[in-house]
Length: 324
Image (cartoon, rainbow, N blue to C red; front, side, top):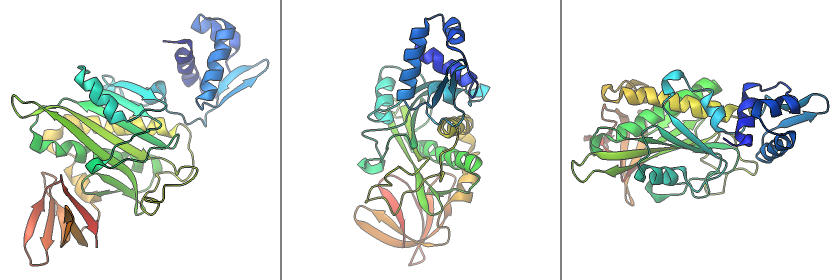
């Protein structure tokens, strides 16, 4: 590790307390000049570090910057096998993780970033990923399952995100089938699962689970095309919240993932399903068909009733829904 990485780890362990330059230099086996340079670099990254003559340096408790050490300190022991990489900015966490997967990265590799320049959404859409206000993360999975069951990864992730933000915000969350999380009628999270398939057995070679959460409203608000839809989990910045949020989502998902075949998450999914009993439009291509949303089944298909009385189970993919 670099002096900067070691210093951040030391600060995280002593958050809110002053450490003298001499004490830090001795602990990291480096010069005080190297300590000063590392402190300045961390400040440039957004860490709020106070320097007081005669006392030293202190990482303020209200700091909310994503970091590898910051995420790891909130992960439970059972998630110790996760390999977490954190970036300040990246083109796309899903794209980067697909590259790592192709190079043989193990299951449990996670790429997290505070900003994406080319965030990816469902059906080829872009995903707005501004600096310093969201959590953008991708997790590599190598499950033993068929392509038909891959939707379980997305739906288990939706429950994991909903429960994580409920616990940390104290407010209820809903799931818009199949992969969006809403709070107070606004979308606060999108989920995109991309998969590579084995030509030998038709099963999954690997899956990349991408999750983007709007923790806070961007300083200049959301872009015009999504300002009436998008929302944020928190109304104001909270201490270390994005690290807590990332760790909470990862730990909850890994538990569901270990029990995926048992559908332990499905009742929680149904409980949070938006628009139950309401009129929706089932959209395929450019065509929308009016229906009433009934529920979701154990295979995460949407159960609907069309205007002619016919009931159907709708699968995800090219199908989407919109409230009438």
